[in-house]
Length: 223
Image (cartoon, rainbow, N blue to C red; front, side, top):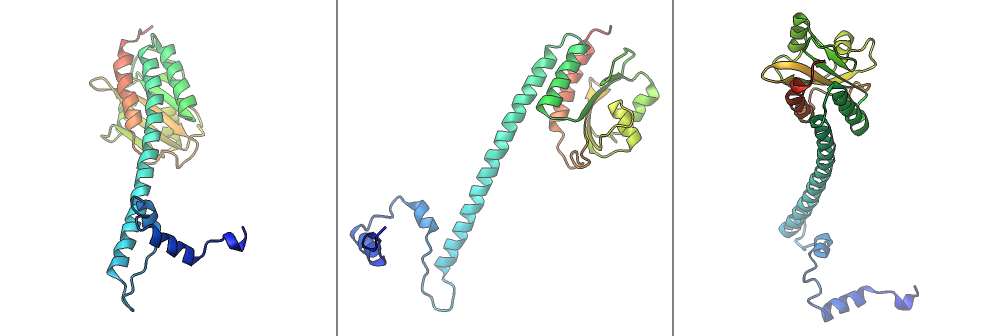
């Protein structure tokens, strides 16, 4: 652009003088302007107020962005959970339950390991496992220490017990009790990352799936 077409400060001043209503309905533009107020050595109260308003505006925008991102994540989680629940409701036998869980947990949720331990005499196959021994049932129940679910790291022996594996590569686990009046089993998901499932994590999703299983599993044929 040639110097003859370049705007000068005088041109801007003249334009604003000719258009005194220019800033009307241009709040976004005003919010970004820096207009010092001459108050000598002291900080102008007006300048301080404007700075505070700008900081709050940035903070509110970040909060809104976080809320929208959480909403998008929750929407995706709801969609995946809905597909799993519908598949479980449609299950006619234990093979259908295993297929629904395996497809959803491994494909939709990228789970490294999962298992379902059910307190029954009926024989199940890995990753479904029947626990008929009452002492073993009580041992599993004690792991929850009165809680509905837990997340974190366990000993290798306990991890192998819950995942029905020997020398499992899992390093962290989340487990929820399956209930139908009382504890009837446990559903577990685990990761090879020791920090993936932490004690501070929310187990709402796993609790929900355990509730659905608690309603469905007692109605499946035991043969």
